[in-house]
Image 1 (cartoon, rainbow, N blue to C red):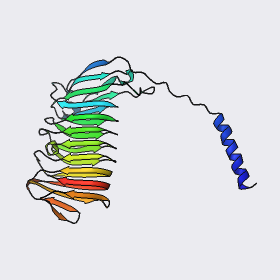
Image 2: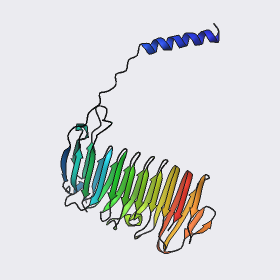
Image 3: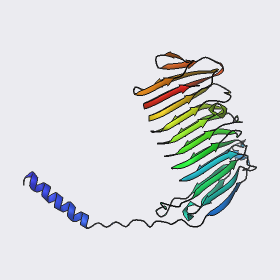
Image 4: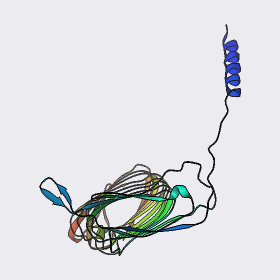
Length: 288
């Protein structure tokens, strides 16, 4: 049996198999009337851990598509409102001691393609907490200045995010982790975040990291992304060293910077800021 004959037999077999398949697409849910829910989560009592007492809270927010706004000023751990018009978007609050979760359920049916509304507007309290945000394709507006964040983790997809620390974070933050995809992310006042380590992982997007604010201690920053436009803003007078590892990126550096190979530095007083960039390609801008 030659190759042409075998190919013809395989083609006929595949065609007959395809005729036997039927596809039942899931039913698409429709948007309904708007539902507005008031959200209040009290500060949990200190949690016992062995002989020690821990008063640190872990708050996890799981959000799908829509608009997510966070700001300080809550009298409780969390105050705010959630507006949605699809039943599957109804939020769920899970409290387990000092572990608090505010989640959205997964769609049981196809989400509506038009007319869906999903808006979270939450205020956070000033007690020490670890904050974790998981989101999909959404618009995020985060004002986190004046909180007491000990750790901050953000994971999102195709997002449009504006994040700011307009005031000093009142707790020493051990680590700030941000992982995103093909997004537009702008962060300001990062020196006020009071972190020890900041790890940023991006895909193909536009990212602006502005380290304005009052740097409290030596801090390290690791940036790892693909084909992107990356802007690093460091105010004058900050003691900073930026090391770039990228064979394909165009690098634009403003006035007042010293260069030695792939290392760019600015002299200053106070704590030291160390930034390491590993980027596949695109454009990197360093300015004041």
